[in-house]
Image 1 (cartoon, rainbow, N blue to C red):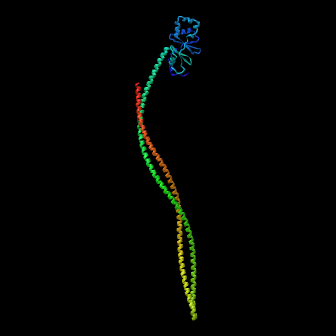
Image 2 (cartoon, rainbow, N blue to C red):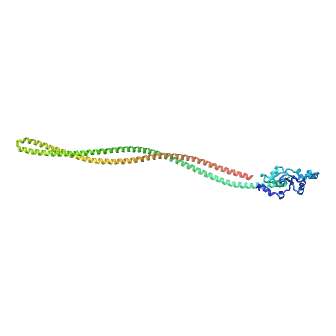
Image 3 (tube, helix red, strand yellow):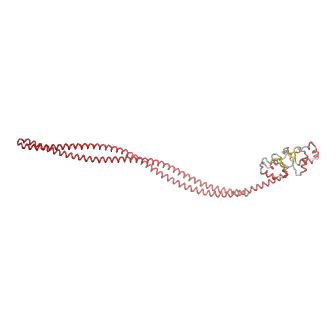
Length: 435
């Protein structure tokens, strides 16, 4: 079963049982049967004519039948087989509305088809009900009453909605006022904080610039220190080479001193031999003098020779003693030189060890210095980046301060708009209530 529109449902409840079960005529029914229906039902104003499947093809109106009966020849016409056998002569168009058709008011259909005596209602194209003109007038009155009630209900709903909207708009206006005031206060505070942040960012940027300059100076000094350490490292390598050469020279000198000591020992041995020979010669001269004395005058020449030989032996002995003393002095000097050489060797060894330690320390310090220089360079770069970020933060803070000022102005405009909206709504509701 199809779903009917709301006004059609109300129409079904409004129809009487007689209207929902109207009399009808078939197309081939005699005209006398139509007359009999109108005579039997005094309130009948139209009689639907249907085909074989109960679809209305038109209607016979009560005024046409009455006009026929009031005609002096009416009864004769009814008895005439050519005229009274069928109802075709009196069928006229009649307004028809289908309850399952488009959602249109039957009163609109009735008015559109210029109805006068009534109209036919169908469902799915078949006869369903007949409504007289008088009942249609009452239906129109009921529809108007229903529309009036609907309009009154709508007015009451509008009034209630207006009151509710008025309350809601008043609350909304209060909220907008509070929001605008809070927004303006927040914008002012934001502008102040943004100004403070901008000043702090500028100060921090200046401090970072000073730090960057200081780091740049440290980087330059560190590079100079690294260059100095490089030079020290090179000098240390040279000193180590010189120390190795000095050690080699000391070793060669020690070998020469050893040779000199051996030569001095050889000289001492020769001096001892010379001293022994001088002693033997002196002893022989003494023996020769004794023998010359025994010889008397014949040995006087030997005495002179023995005396000379004794003198030469004495000179040779003294010379040997002097040479021995000199050799002893040389050996003492060689001993002292040897001792000094040992101390020199110890000092050179200490210097070589110290040089190696210095070289290691310089190498480590060189690595550390280069690392420091690299770190300082990276710090300079990062400081530059941070300074750029701080500058951008300062610019953002300035922009935020400007935006906050704009927001404060917008909040003031919003507050004015809220006041104007509230006043406009009050005027609208006043005019609506007055209407």
